[in-house]
Image 1 (tube, rainbow, N blue to C red):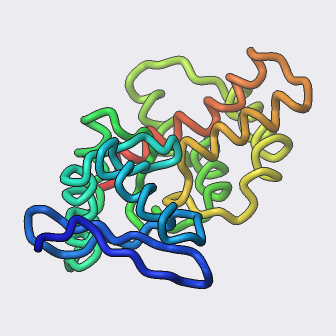
Image 2 (image 1 turned 180 degrees about the vertical axis):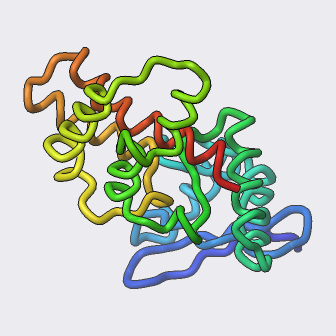
Length: 209
């Protein structure tokens, strides 16, 4: 008889393992959060009928869809991926509008501390970005660069600490925004500070192979 799922108890709680309808393999066990088998059976059948809650929003997904997603994740984890492969995956997800992060390889320049990268980026005399702007006729004043470095030390460095460039995501930028808002800074000031982070991140993503 074909089984859609199996129940097993762990630390007094029943877990359900659904069966991938395509290959018959068990999916990762999911807690029913109940200690009684009958209630666990009811929960399992409800998930079968309505979909398995997934992600932070607990949006229900049909068993077949959840199984496909888990298969993809397992395949990625087992693959011998390099930094280029990882960035291709990130780019594909970004193109689908599923994520919005700034990703830089976990090697070479991408592994430097974020603050160190920002300090170099806004250095008027040595910045690749600023020198390129000046070479193409853009107006970029030494005063503006100085103000960016000043803001960097005062408002950004305390938040990021020693975090690496390749580990910075939009969640970090949202966290910084909230911290700045909690300090009572105006929307205009917050946006100016965020640009000191966003502009270098965008440049690094586009320029560094």
